[in-house]
Image (tube, rainbow, N blue to C red; front, side, top):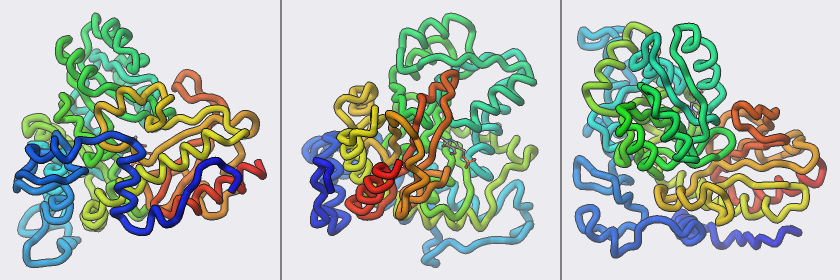
Length: 409
Ligand SMILES: Cc1ncc(COP(=O)(O)O)c(C=O)c1O
């Protein structure tokens, strides 16, 4: 390998080794001493300072046990349209059980599951916004959200203003006008802009606005936006939470009062999670902590490799010390996540040549995924941009595949 990144396979022989490398590389997260007082006297390097376990356990234990039936190793799939007298569009035992798990992981009062991430976003926004309301959003968010904003929300007379929320001064100015909702992703899709959750939430609240954060890219294992001031946190559970590219799902968490309103509208809009997908989400969440540690460790190595490659103009990864989002990310996340992007100097066609990685558009799966973007300056997407979701494979294999693909592109 000609890259100056020395990726030793021995570094990654076990999950513990990968975790150690992840933290050593990112340099974030509380120290053992800090953690000693954080949760039941445990010294766990990955314990989130904001995590509040209902059971007094570490988040890794709650990911395995919360919401589960103590008589079964896997919560059963209640496939019936009616179970114990309840119609599934309103309530279903398998869906309800996974809702308990995710509310525990987000340390939320209440959580609801939806058909997919877009169902979570649209059902939430259509509940809290009304014709004439104004929403301020970061200029780079998931394309489906952009289309919701420009299409149905616009047609309903909901005014949306895009600003650069990495600049809190811009947010302060935007909030001078009456605002109902401030909306952003912690690490934005696809440009990897980093928004300061605590500062943005404080400014929004001062102006009387509600804060909605899409936490799909980091998951509650790496950051808990509610603990930092957000009012609602939502997810595409299709991604890291499900984790294996085998089911669609969405999650919304927050106060019981707000969630009850969204839950009631979910019953009318109909964007509910399929019981089979609730079952798969339960399975995925059990290993979320370990997978996230590995995604973070691998992404840092791939980002470092890409930074040294002559065909790459710029790498977007908040874990890199030179990244514009590094300072804010460092103070609010426990790991920088598995998503990165890079701008090619000439052709962005690298995805056509990968062999191990998959040239697919999704993200958060165990396999490494790579996709190209066309320039959309109005959506904050740079030219010749390539987005990668780094999987949990051996990092040396991912880098070798990327290297041969870059050589051909
Ligand atoms: C940040 C983010 N939010 C929401 C979604 C939509 O999720 P879904 O495909 O589950 O509807 C995606 C999809 O990629 C996403 O990346």
